[in-house]
Length: 105
Image (cartoon, rainbow, N blue to C red):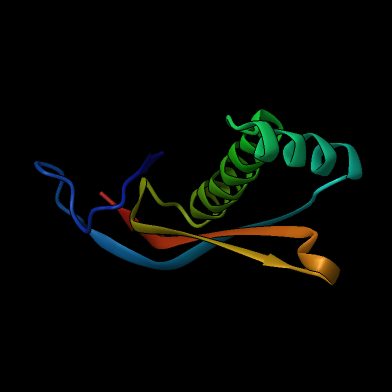
């Protein structure tokens, strides 16, 4: 499955547009990660725990979108966009969504 943020793929003409596909994931931040992140904020540096959680959430949303595209016979997803949002009580949840156009090449 080809996934691209561009609206076209050079040398690969689109034969059919199959519709918009999406992927979503919501992850919670636990107390230990919050504590370690706050320590990192005080002493400087990057928060590896949050970076890992963000990476995993993004990959899961993209996988879900690709699976939905496969289910409708797509070869590629074009024009993919990823959005991030915090939600929940005290902003304790992270939502990652992605969307693009499923196409047959």
